[in-house]
Length: 84
Image (cartoon, rainbow, N blue to C red; front, top):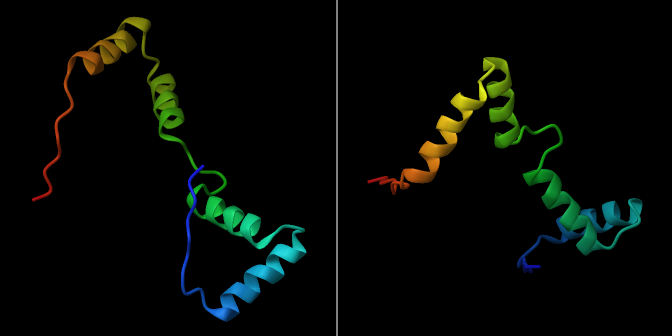
């Protein structure tokens, strides 16, 4: 698993994380992992695959129509996006 080092954390922030960690019965490191996970994976988020599957169900795609999407994605090369 990758590691991250964070430099120059203000004393008051470090202290607050330590207090929060103690309240939750965790180490500071475990508390920071939890904070980061909550920040990037918020509860109730909709995953793209799930969302697309729900759209397909609402549209009531047939197996043949769905197969068209699958076959097109395998044979079409991806294009590089140019942001210039």
